[in-house]
Structures are given as C-alpha cells and as structure tokens.
Length: 288
Image (cartoon, rainbow, N blue to C red; front, side):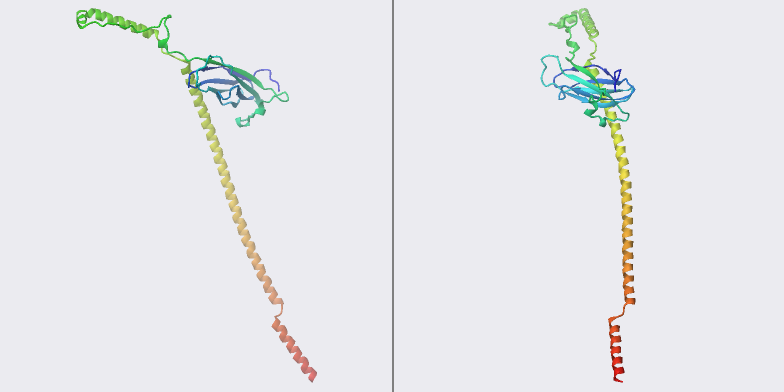
C-alpha cells in the first residue's frame, strides 16, 4: 500500500531537555494523523535505558491527535558538554478500524510485501538550566545593593534631619529602579512542568476510563458465569431426578419379574407330593 502524503505530523521534531543534576526532565510530543485512515504508531530510541516513553505505542483516529511524553532520567554526574547523539524514531502505518493498542506488535511495522511504513527521526537537544535573574548582569555589570560603610551618629541625625530624609528618598528611588529592572522569572522549566502536569492528568483520566471499561467488562463476564453456573446446577438437579426415577422404575420391574416367576413355577414340595401319590396309586392298582 503506497501513500503519497505523510501520515503523521510531528511537533516538535527536536526533543529539548533541561539538564540538572539528580532531576528528571520531560518533553511532550504531539502526533497528528493527517490521513483519512486509522494509523498505528510506535516510538523507538537509541538509548532505551536513558529515556522513558509513555505511551510508546498507540492508534490514532483519522484527523485526530495523540500526545506522548518522553522523560530523561536524572543525571548523577555533570555532563562534560551539551552535545547529545541520542535519536528517536517514530514509525507509523495504516491499520484497520477497530485496532487497539493490544494488537500492536513489532511485526506490524515490518516492511513486507510493499507495505508502507512511515519513519521520522527526532534529535535530542540538551540545555542548561536558566540562571536566577538576581545574578544576571544588567548592562554588563552586576547590580548590587549599595553598602554604606558608616552610619551617621546620633548628633548628626538630630542636627541633619533634612539630609537623612534626602538619603532615604535616594535609597527608595534606587530600590524602585532595581525592582523595575528585575522582572519576575518565567523559566522554561516551569512551562515544561505545567505541560507535563497537563499531559499526566490527561493520561490519568484515560487510565481511569480504561479501568472503568475493564471493570464493566469483568462484571458482564461475572454475570454470564453466574448464569452458566445456575444453568449447570439446574441441569444437574434434573439429571439426579431422572436417575432416581429410573432407579425406582428398575426396582419396580425387578419386583414384578419375581412375582411372575412365583406364579408360573410349581413348588418343590408340591411336586414331591404328586409323585408320592402317583406311586401309591400305581402300587394299589397293581396289587388288585
């Protein structure tokens, strides 16, 4: 099956991670299915022990999107430089409607018999954590709070109230200028954390929905099992009743057969008496 257009639109195509010691860093990637078919995807990496991809497989409906989260494990030692040769590979192929994530296997992305499998490579970019804005230089010179080496004596304060007021105003003006120059920090890490939190909440909602669906399926199967057990119990009861009825009929037939044998046959004593009478009669007749 040949495709003239791309199946998946990937954004971003560079995975940017903020490298900090003993801290994980995450990056979210969105896959958009531009085709009119169901598309299955799989994410691979050259360093599977270094990264965690959730989910690494899935099925995207036509004209729909799906996000996956890539988490880089915490670094135990400082990196000598920020160059990284790690790569990610996103594979996509058209599947039939109704295909689920459980149906996705490695053989599904095998390029056999002219099957079209789209592959897109993503590179990894490492970045240093942003510095605190208080330590950033302003116009090339670090801004510091002025330090007064000597403080006015008690007599000078009492004699120069106007000078003290003027100094306080100067200090307040300097603090206001400093507060205007320093903007509240909005770091990339905070935005990434918010985005990761949103993705994790979405994944949690999906997991809860899947769990509810599986529970409902188990309940249906349990009801079917209960119905089957009740049917088997009823059949067993009927079979036992039929067996008891057959046993009674067999006993009744045996009794009737014994009665018939008694009615048809002659007792042994009766035969002996008849024989004796016959012998006596024969002897008397011969004597006459």
